[in-house]
Length: 378
Image 1 (cartoon, rainbow, N blue to C red):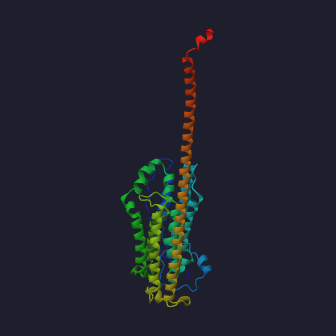
Image 2 (cartoon, helix red, strand yellow; image 1 turned 45 degrees about the vertical axis):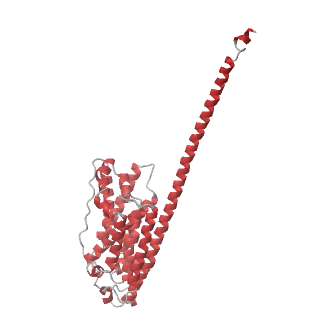
Image 3 (cartoon, helix red, strand yellow; image 1 turned 60 degrees about the vertical axis):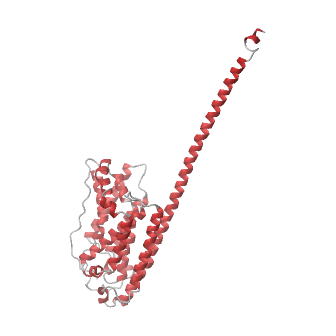
């Protein structure tokens, strides 16, 4: 069953003022990309009457993958963000032809937009208010998958590379150095915000309210995506930030988040009764009751969440090792250059000594008695 849809106005983001001249379109496109990516969480599908009828078909791989709704209010911002991103990368490549944007940056950001579309437009969205387990998949896409992929695209870096020096100095850098950005991007603040959002969303009236109120449901999606972006930005560490964590700090940052995810999952898993009246009121759709579905959702959060955090830990560890190797190679190159300079100085010194030694011998021969004119007279 396809739920009833009602239109609502899209959230409008304010783009950075653009500089004059040929760079204007570049900055506008870049700003559109960043703003659209940040606002997509709030642009969830048009309000879903969560208390409406349950879809008659049980969820399976086919209808989860193919049951897309394609709402213009979300699809259009996603397309605008993708087009703006593509134009931004083209501008960055033209500005720096010797250092083109790596393919992994280009496709990571687009994959993040795709993950948002899957969470909010595919068959996952169709069942999110019927089965808590499906809702959990949606939330993991919005908190653990999409934000990490968007951060891997390094959008702020690409914006800085594409913008003119005047735009960077006047608009972009002041925003990055502002007090607000310094506070919200601080690793401790980002970690605590992500943790607070996860616990408050699942153990407060907000979650059940979001299942009944379409606007709260949409705001919850935006909250999850925003908290995820704050959390993953320091981990990825590709964009400039007021406080940049070193690799050991990133490993600790992720490692401390793993037990938090596990404890939250265990709190849901071992609950003796359904936590959310909305799901309990649906009875046993598709032969699974609310408590069993709740435990399945907790299992997904525990297992999949920890797998994602472990994969992120391994990726950061691998990046640390590559960074150390690059540092060793660079140090070895500097040492080779220095050794070459030392050898050149030694060779020059030897040449000077050899030249100086020949001159001294000539002077000595001229100073010896019985040489010079005396010998020639003989």
